[in-house]
Length: 224
Image 1: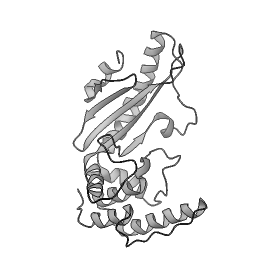
Image 2: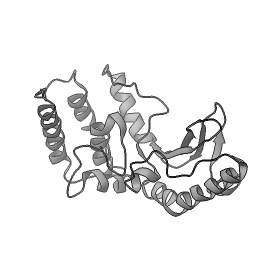
Image 3: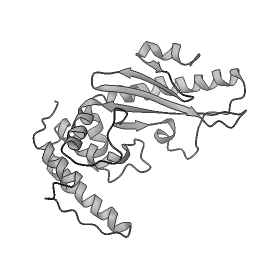
Image 4: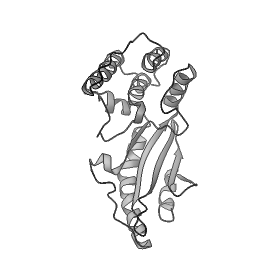
C-alpha cells in the first residue's frame, strides 16, 4: 500500500482496511470498481496475487428482487457480489498463478508494484471505465457469438453467469434478448447432457431461478 495507494488514489481509489489481504475500491456512477488481492504467503518469499471486478448496482438490485420473491440463489447475493471480473492472468491467457516475481525485500515489493501499475493504468482502468456502460459487457457475452460459459475466458461472471447475461442484455436493450433466452436454456441443457446428467428445464416453473428471473425481467426497462 505504501507504493501503490499514492499512485492510484488520483483515480478515485481508496484502501478498505482489514485483514492480511487487500481491497481497494472506488465509487462509480453504476456501483463500484474493486482491486482485490493477497499473497501466496510462502514465508519468507511472497508473491502478490490480485484481480479486478466491477459491481453494478442495477444488476445487484434485480438479483436481490429475485431473492425477495422467494427464489434461493447459491451463494446468496450480497453487497460483495461482483458483475464482471478479470486479471492480468485471464486477459493474457496465462496458466501460471501469478505473473509477478517473488519478493523477499522491500525493493522487490517496489518493483512488483511498478509492474502492477503498468497493467492497472494501461489495461485495467480503461476496461473498468469501458464496462461502466453495460452495453459494452453485453457485446462481450451476448455478441455475434454468445458465450455458453465464461470458463477460460478473459472475463469472469461467477456463479451467476446465466443470470447476469440476461440481465445485462435487458438493461442494455439488446434487440436479440428473446433469442438469448432460448440460447441460455439450450446452453444449460446442452452442458447438463455433456456432463452426463441430462436436464430439461421446465420454462413455466416460476419456482425455479431462471424462469422466475425471466418473468421478473419482463417489467425491466433498458438503461439506454
